[in-house]
Length: 346
Image (cartoon, rainbow, N blue to C red):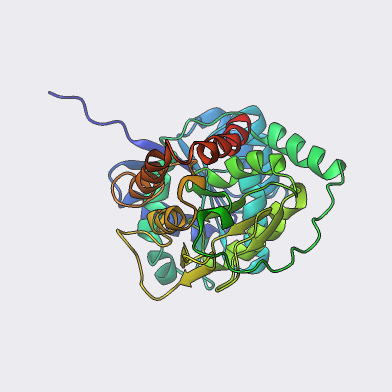
């Protein structure tokens, strides 16, 4: 007889007995998952993470005694496990969830506002998918390193860059254009971005566009928190604004972001999912390749959707522009390597 597939062992951390039951019921519907324990606060979570050694932990934030942030920091420092945050989608909930991601949690699911059983069923498939995906992530002791990076950046008193004056729309000539870096991040992305971000300075000579799968309620807060410890100007992208070097743009949740041929940001919240994803990174990369040509740089930090390969079509467009430019635009290709080296160092 062939051996059965090993199930993914899940520890549920939630202070509400009702919600623990709801979550356990959801996980029990998936034959790949097995709930091996429940914790009602962060103190129990730390102890059970050590004794049970689960494959994945789902973590609430607001709990008595030791909250989800403290528990996440302790677990990721001493006994790292893949952690999926399951918490409120309110503004306050978004801030706490993003802090947990800074501390090493790799994914999150926003609870519906009323968080009753019926509403949780609306995020069931998303929750199951993210827990299964989290089990495949190789985690490391990230909390202390991230905390040190953030603290060092804040301690250095990085000045907020002065507002950038509006830049005239570029002409059709390539010489009027500038480098554009597109970063795509999904599972584990926020923590990775926060390790890269301190390396960007206010005078970074390229525009940076970050596309992540986040709810609309989270991206504004994410931009604000990211700006706390990096020198580059950080903002949530706005429709029809001109792309500027020295600025990191966060793609708003629930919208596709494209760059027009004149260098303006175009947001699309009406087309729905493209190849199953919203936002779709290929849509962004393809438009950036058309605008910046060989000055475009693509970086996929984790698995993220467009088609089957997560940004493969967009990256191909950017490569095509670079390959076509060799011979008569060699200088510009070499300058593009400068920005790629920056990303590799960080």
